[in-house]
Amino acid sequence: MKNSKNLNFLDKTGGKWEMQRRTIQSRSFWIIIIAGFVTGMGNGSVFGAALMCWMGRGGFEDWGGMGWDAYVPTTFNGFMNFWILAFGFVFMLMLALALKRHDAIENGRRS
Image 1 (cartoon, rainbow, N blue to C red):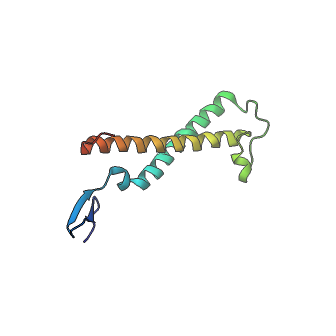
Image 2: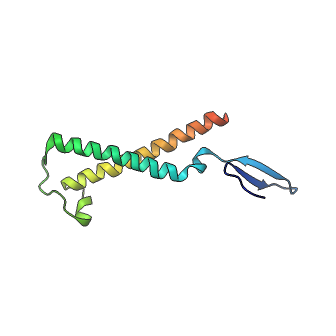
Image 3: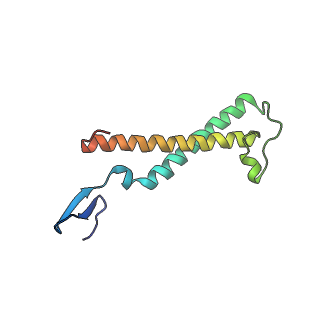
């Protein structure tokens, strides 16, 4: 049988085809990863820019540099990159949780 975008067709015992609705999370897996992470990284970069304006270089002796040095959290650039990645990960989790709860409300299930 053909699969549509929102329905899976399962073969149960007895040879009958049964339809099962896919969850919102399974239909939007890549949207959760890409949109959540990119949005969070954008907010993390704004946080990093505000941090730069507020504290300057602060107690960081090294600005970070290129390559792997840009991701070492003890440098200024690495500290900012850490927050950008942390914001991206947290926003991805928030979007996944929001879509899970939306799916529960839409389909009348308790989560």
